[in-house]
Amino acid sequence: MLSSSRNIAICSFIGVVTAANISRSAPTSTVPPGWTRVPSGVAVRPDCIHVVPNNSVVDLESGTVTLNGSKIAQHSAGPEQPVRPKGNAAAQQGTPPGNYYGWVEAAQEQLNLSNPNNISHLSAWWNVPPAPVPPSGDNPIIYIWPGIQSDQCLHPNFGCEVLQPVLAWGSAYICPTGGSCAWYGGNYWWIASWAVGDYGTWLSQPQQVSVGDWLIGSVITTSYNSQTDQTAYAILAQDIINNNNSGFSIVSAGITWDWAFAGVLEVWQINQCSDFPPSQYWSGEPTYSEFEHIFLETNYPNNNIATGTWSAWYPIFYNGPDCGFTPYAFSNNSGSYWNDLTWMHP
Image (cartoon, rainbow, N blue to C red; front, side, top):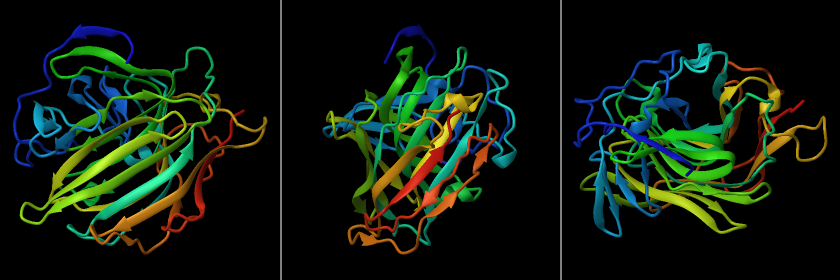
């Protein structure tokens, strides 16, 4: 976390988040000035982003945060839901004008599941790419992550949520409830685990990582309560070279988690291809973000290897320059092979 700034009002009242008191925002092509661009393809009011301690547990419905079994905070999702771009037609961003953004490419697999038979384990390894060297005046935000998404994101139902261990480049402006606004991250690579959606925006304490470090990102079911229909997930981003970890757990009820992403390249504030990381090999060769040792399992506690195959997805929704994006989906679901996301740097 870098410099702090002014205090602002708390995000909203403390209360139970339900479909009755908060509805999903309609897709829009405008991002309100000052809102923070977060992973999962949305922009959020900075005072509605909650930074929680590593190893804490967030109950998505109540907003209760516990650590070592003791309640330490309670937050609401906020009076204004995240702004969601308009699919492939997302052509304008609020501020600054002329910057491009979106989910660029992914390796993904949608499973035919129904709660409580959910994705129970997703994990992947990947390498921290070279540092971007953007032209003067450009301030790209780059998010690279594996993760899972709820089925509710595909339907007009409350409960859209994305769980994701994220490698990030750039800064996120966050105003924690009751705290001071601050820039998290900077012109370096950093990791954090995120839960973003209708139940609010949550992230663990960011940790800086270095170019060339190996990361493991995982989203793993740790418990299921059949009486309350509550599923607990641990979201963890690990730097296995420097032993830097950033993660927390969430508890959800009644949500079907059936969409897996072995790897996603997501960007904000992109103006040109030179805003992306350069090749780690030599000029003129593509830059790879290669996801390896990918495991995908379902149906906790049986944890069956998922049937089906990964598929490459490009474009998803992205309105920026064509930088030779080429996703490759080679992997099966048992930890073999790999999936690649690639781009060209001039």
